[in-house]
Image 1 (cartoon, helix red, strand yellow):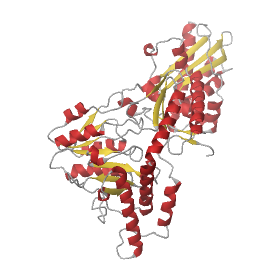
Image 2 (spheres, each protein chain N blue to C red):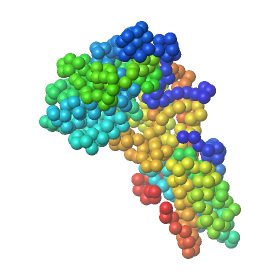
Image 3 (cartoon, rainbow over the protein chains, first blue to last red):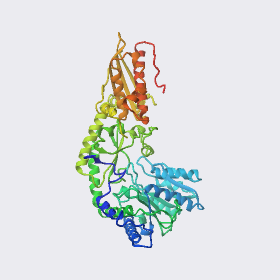
Image 4 (cartoon, rainbow over the protein chains, first blue to last red):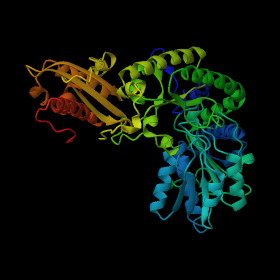
Length: 404
Length: 137
């Protein structure tokens, strides 16, 4: 693992050493259960959790009481969507979401369809964005929830959150957002955007894995979700289970650092990302996927035409860690459904890499990455029969491929 | 996913990468797969007419590491074999040699199809009876 360059921060981020330091005492010395009301161990733990709740609430402009701790964003997505579906069942059974959402949202919706829900999956445009007109047109009398992600995990495209919030408010529908990739990286203000439910997690913002949160609005309107875990009635009855105190303490610290350093981090990351993109775009037949106008500062998703992503990664994966939109490891051989939802052809989707920078990425990392990926692309193109055909002027669309 | 050392070796040092002159009667070309599926393999053989022996083999592949290793290995195996012998190369031989995991078996299937495709093309070009079936998997 020596001298690895980590450009897969959308997958997970390293835990900031400052975060680790704050967590350590809560494993042994201050190991109490935050629900133990009868002794100092419990009080200390509860105090630490309350402080973290404040730190996290401040990051998204919420009230601390509106933060419900979970095991991560997947659980928070499940709790929000299933919980709202059950809580508001008498108001209707229709949910609106989009086809580029994370599986934690899509699969939850699919599961609810089996239980009688009606779900509309909006198609995103070629830039990865949801159309506000289509969203509004999809609203019906029985619509109870709109679930649209804040920023996409694969391409970093940011949705028009304010516009969606206004439409939901106008129609009296709950607005839920999976904001896993956005919170801690760009300013997120639940008041300003009119969000009612929002899922996010610590490990995408330099906090520990295994702890996340669901923001549940308490005022204008007061929102409730039916708990999905039965037990001790923790977290205002919405999520039972002993709180992960060290994790929550780390989450709080991560939120505090994110808030303090956001401007500085963002400015630095945009420079590095643009440097990386400019460097890689020197290669022929290279395309950036997704909306470059409305995008997270640290992500780029690039297709290198006529090169297969997984093979390309193999040329440098001893040195650089990235993700590919090509799913050659799955039996289905289906490339990224997010890129396909944006209308990208399967060939370009198979040729894509997602590079997500982070707080610990350096300029040196970026320059080395440009060099190694460029070498990899050139090497793979030398090996690629379709690159050779393209160079000879063969119209690849007219070739009768033998699909298997 | 971790690759076997043999896959890595072929991937790092692919054998017989290149292009043979497909206008020659002695050259047979097999092109299998599709860009939409994430892999395209082109395998070419040059056959000595008198002995029906494969004197050269080249490949180019668009695909993952296993697809590249499978085609590289196939060209190594083809050289020096008679056309008759080449027809008998089975995808499972490639799976075994490269220790391909189940999700990568399709790479070996593609290589077998590419070999058969190249033989078929050679036979057709030379007015010989076609004795292979391509894409029967």
